[in-house]
Length: 250
Image 1 (cartoon, helix red, strand yellow):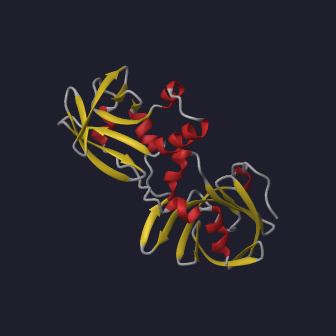
Image 2: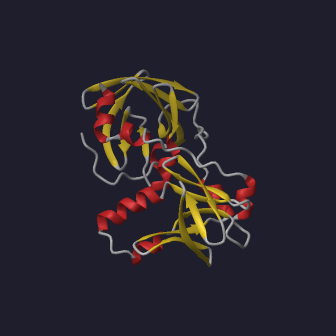
Image 3: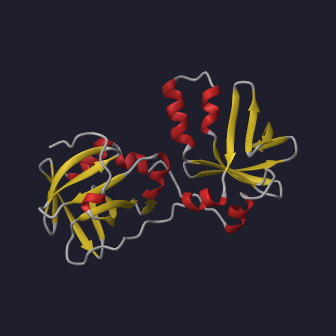
């Protein structure tokens, strides 16, 4: 089945790690522009230059850090979100307390550094503009051409076991999943920079000898494979698709 190829690359695994969209209120966005500790923070990657961790460990921390947010509220509460999992916290003038464990912190020039010794994490306060651009609500189709299905389509959602995951969060760590359907009925599926050639007609896409039925409706492509439902939305013409990192596999 077509879905086995997707599973082999790790698409299902990446999208079912519990990654959720960061919910940011207007008040939190405004707070990011104000002075003081209150606000929403992301991992400060410049801090990795000061660590003795290996290159592989740093890359892993950057990947996780891209999906990590620290929220500091004015009332002494807050939360830490990692891959969509939220942990409540409390804070005072000296410590940030998570799961009953307190860690000292400093705040200077928009950077909050918590912990001490080797166990230190640094977070950079996000601006209102960054928060707006970081919002990860469900994707919707762009201005598609009603006379053709050819186009560049981004993965919008994945439904598995009744749970729907918003795939746009992958953009936070530079990972994209997309389809390209050309006018000549050829195309490509790109999974995290790995392209795979395909052919398509009005009902079926074929890749590496495997077929997958799909439904097209007003700029949206939906296919079901191995119990999972993948939804793609129109994002542009075929030539507007990004170049894959590797050469396409035939």
